[in-house]
Length: 341
Image 1 (tube, rainbow, N blue to C red):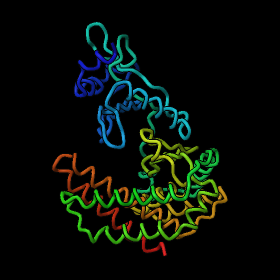
Image 2 (image 1 turned 45 degrees about the horizontal axis):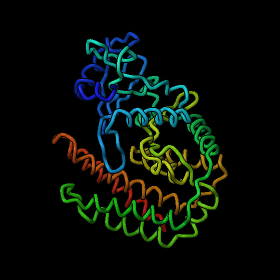
Image 3 (image 1 turned 60 degrees about the horizontal axis):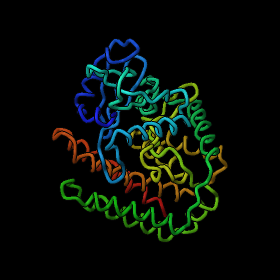
Image 4 (image 1 turned 90 degrees about the vertical axis):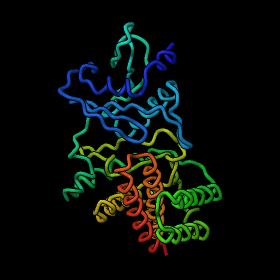
């Protein structure tokens, strides 16, 4: 019954409903709708509601109502690890007997949304970086939260061969996407970086094996970027990557290097470095500098691939923005890979 009801309402119909203030159970003065590649987020005065688009890609499947509900439940569970009082519930967009849509209403669910407490935009780490306003005590508080999180996670068993194969496969996948002629990215921007990263994976077995033996491969956040970190009195981290567990299984140093690389992209390499160092010190984790730079270069290459991929499904006016973003990441990757030794 729910699936039959869902087929009678298009995504546009649902989005139009959720743009209206009267669709929400709590009064709100306005609704701001933000579209991403895989979701719509609706911001009310006090809350944020995330709707997953009915899409399917090689790395995710949101194609049915039942699957989207399952991913909403998983998003709630995973994000409560680092933002327990932000992720509140999974709520239904329902159709009543007359066909009227409303959140938390009577009738058959036609969609599911994750309900969150709305966070202050100026407290997000990317906003603070843009103002040059990240304090040492905020870095210490964030490092305390992240190190406690990683310390609570069970190590994931993986052989050296499996880990090396996975890293090499990801690097090669990046190369193949970046070679797509439509992206207009000269090979000189990434081929050298790719070869050096593959060389590191092939030759630095001891460094990678040490991470496995130390139990540093865990099921982490998966998308640790400044725009997902909120510098409250006790910092919270949102938007854990819920749709693909493989993307969350990684080296703690990889995840923290990812955050450091993104801070560098936003013009604050020293802040990213301080966060990385503070976390490692709390975890008594001595990460060799060569490995840190490898992970920075690896993550920058992955982000370049994603930026290039995004350029294929945006309005024409935004294509160059994403190509420029890809080039920016490739420049960061080239710089970082030089320091791998």
